[in-house]
Image 1: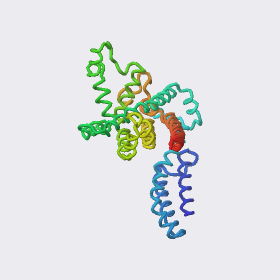
Image 2: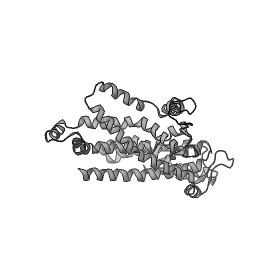
Image 3: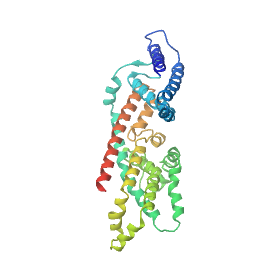
Length: 341
């Protein structure tokens, strides 16, 4: 195990020295590092079995997942932090150059990145409205109405579609400002120039509506499952005690649904933080970056400007923001549900 570890570190050191042009000794590709990593994993597995016996055999089943996580998650993340500290533009002939924290200081002064962060706050706050609509639909589908199974399938259809398909079907077709049915209806209602994506405020609202239409069924199906798992005896007891429909919902149903509601909200917020495909397809961040999310802005930084170093710095900073925010959100949600219960 020690020899394999030293061998892996030696191969990595040679490769790093070669890539940094500090030494002529090394390898042209990272393939020897991959071979050394595989041998290191085999040596670790054999060493666990020989030194720990039966416990080592049980740990051997976890080793492939650990090695995969290191190779596909930890190493790319560390490599990403290194790229974020470089000046690397694919359209430049000078190649990659280390520039320290220059990308970080540029990010702090970038008004378009701050605008994208502000838009993400608005998009995340819109989840509250989506939750209210999803809860209402879940209550409707949980009631004894006609064709209930049919409506359940119909309401789930947007979730079955790709966000890109939704973008083309609604954003590029129905809401097209010249011949789209939505624009034609708006003209008949008195809107002279129904360009949904030319005004910043209307464009943001349109993006929120498109994204909500796609993902409200996701929260609805989770809330519906929670409603169906709720004890009927509790609801019957509330009715026997004289509670009306609103009192039964506010004092019985809603508190009992809090754990499911919190889970649905957290998952929806996590999906919302990755919002990019609808924006890229419909508006490309326009008008003037008004609809940009952080993910779509980073994507355009890579695609339009070929600025790999600066784009990676934006992505790494956003990763840190997401980790901190989601960690705080989970702690707050856990404390909130515990206090309510």
